[in-house]
Image (cartoon, rainbow, N blue to C red; front, side):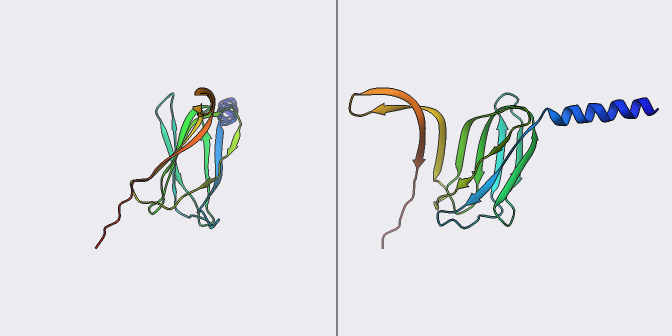
Length: 143
């Protein structure tokens, strides 16, 4: 019986050692914390989504994620959603990702691509690099 308990404990410890986590803080453009924002990490390999919410100090943590490739989204009503794609987590990595939410309507969307192609407007050539794309669709009623 003791042997079974020891084996179970070792198996659990080995499983926990094969994970990674994402942690960070959510703020607004003025630097104020954003509580209760929804953060979701979707494994692009398995399709499994792990979700959490930021606490009253704006901090969030997604612990015990299997290592692999992830897409991360951050949502909060009244702010433009953010998508971080191409995130790679290694075994026992603690990735720190802080986000600044921009004020926006429900139809606004901000996407962060880690390895997007950039066009050099001077020479009409492209090169690999990072980019942030914003798509704001707001409308104003005029009297």
